[in-house]
Length: 102
Picture 1 (cartoon, rainbow, N blue to C red):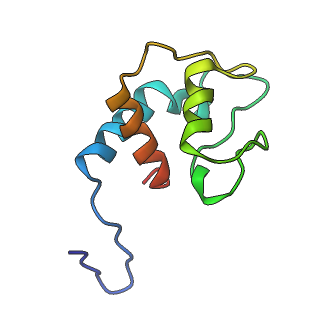
Picture 2 (cartoon, one colour; picture 1 turned 135 degrees about the vertical axis):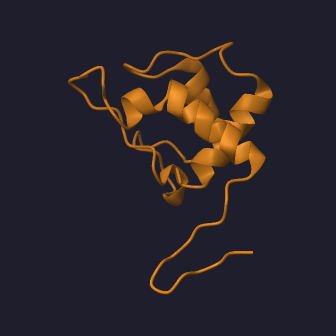
């Protein structure tokens, strides 16, 4: 059940899988994709709303398979995360990304 307070828009609570994905995003992705705390000259793309568009910032299709491939194999300046996520963790991260980083 979603409770709306006058003038406020509330989002549903994260599922346990999305909450795990949020944690993974915060500890493994946000420092580059949100905070750019490494002061990279080429700022990594913001992942908020990643799946709202039919294409990724690279022009590739915005699909679970393509996002998983980029995460695991890396691309450009992004390092590969091969063997750093279990299948369950990857599914959780994708679920969180599909939710638009709430």
